[in-house]
Amino acid sequence: MTNRTDRGVLAGVIFAVLLAQVLLYPGVDRLVQSLGATTDLNASMWFLAAEFGAFVVFAGVWGVLSDATGRRTPYIAGGAGAGAVLYALIAWLPGTVSLPFIGVLVLRVLQGGATIAAFSLAMTMLMDLGGGHGKNMGAAGIAIGSGTALGAPLGGQLYEIQTTLPLYVASTLSLVVAVAALFVTDRAPSDGRSGLAATVSGLKQRPTLGVPYAFGFIDRLTAGFFALVGTLYFRETFELGPGETGIMLALFFAPFALLQYPFGVLSDRIGRTVPIVLGSVLYGLTVMGVGQAPTVAIAGAGMVLTGVIGALMAPATMALVSDLAGETERGTAMAGFNIFGSVGFLAGILIGGTVAGVFGYPVAFLVAGGTEVVLAVLALPGLLRLEKPAKDAVGS
Image (cartoon, rainbow, N blue to C red):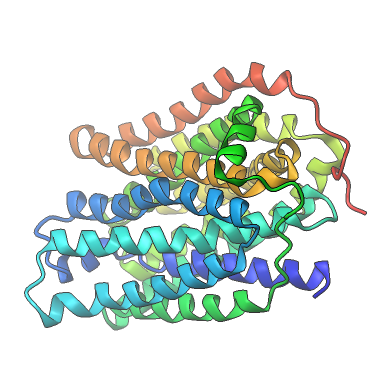
């Protein structure tokens, strides 16, 4: 396949993985009840946290393994296929056998460990393509944003039909990903490959990757916050149903999806610093504003603004990983980015859920947005010390 065709297929893989994931968010409180949970907030928190905890553990395993073997495609297809089976088991087993909720969480961990192979390595295969890292990561950003933008309202409507239906649809999407991945040319670098130890050792020699990792952590923290606290906030504060909640989440994800590609190309031209730093600060401020909105209309407008700002910073952050990683380290480098991002998402769920449960939703939004602003300012000196590499920085 050509670069353009492979870019489209890989973006489609990422889109389907994120669509499957976000389908569950708008009615997660209903879902965990149907799976045997006895509380809404705590059970929802642990159901989401189980998947992202697995992301943290397994993203690095898949990345190092793919770099060491010089293959990406088998792990994407295998991970997506296993994820399809596990999504279906989560939906089917609790109603068939006497499975306690802790058993559901175990299945959720396994599903997350399989799913991250498809997500992280598809992003890595985009890094393997030429044509400009900003362009390639912009394509990834569009896929991520589109999957989440469609997943939120679609998931809400599926919940209105049947509570476990989103899980079965997620299973089907994962199966489609497993098949689609087989048609992509595997461009994992093989020249100079020297095994797991050499790959990890080479990555340790690039501490500058810690800068985009830090911003990835910050950004995904607020995403995790919205997945749990934002969903329940809209449901309880404005008395919205799952379908309406899905639309509110889509107000963020739609501009986040549509603007990532042009903003990714922009970062190829002007550099990564301005989009990352300016975007992160403004993003944190808008998150705080959403939590203080007096009406659902103002909250919705805040979600749109948050999506626009998120689209400015996200592709530049991912492209910076591509700029800094060596050719034979890309799988591990992107896995590291996804590990930090998953830790951030996990932190957003756990911290946001805890603060919301103790102090209420407005305080939780202030903590989430304020953390984004503070950490962005603290990471700024490290980013300013980096110079944007010229090689492969501008599209051919």
